[in-house]
Length: 262
Image 1 (cartoon, one colour):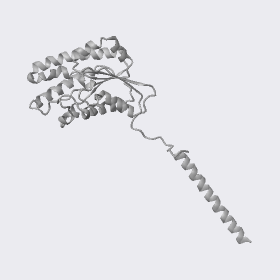
Image 2: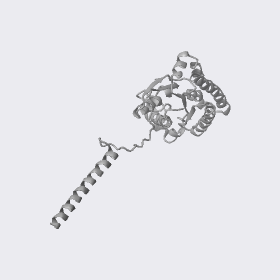
Image 3: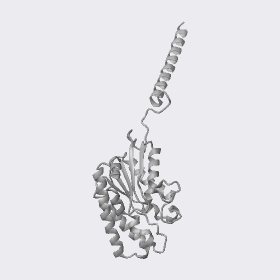
Image 4: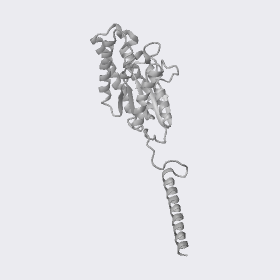
């Protein structure tokens, strides 16, 4: 009799233990994975979640903004838009780039009411300008004097201040990303000289941009520094698809890294 009672108590304890372990396992599983098998812990995400509202990008400037040399016609600005959409952002994108545009022409464009209206609605403004001022369609290569470059540089910087001032007046809250110049002639005989000129040009551009709130200088020189021909279109001046995508990744990373905030 006593033996049967002991066996009963032992069996009961074993069953109770199994039920407790089952319940614990169920609770842990539900806590960790939820009812659908997904982890209940926050998932680490390298990309800050964008705001649910539309994020509007306005692209201004020359043929690089227009996308000349890219067979798809997107250019860096179009690829920035694509990259943000892939990250889950609700993007509105308007490309106002014009092939061959110089800084004085962009400064004039800033006076147009429609341009001001578009910028006024923007969350971010992307811009490439200055390449046509410096290279003059390749003419600068035949006149690489310090005096000639200094004159072009001074005129460009004055126009850049007008452009940035107009953007800020139209929309003081928009983040402005100004892409620096790369050197398409780095592998030519004049490469050492043109590289020095481009680096100096970029430095003064960066110093000017630093005076404006919410404006960011985005370097591109290093992206093309090695094997520049690999990233150029057949005209050996404009970027190809690879070149534009490298530029776009850098800009998109800056936008994503700040969550679109200036």
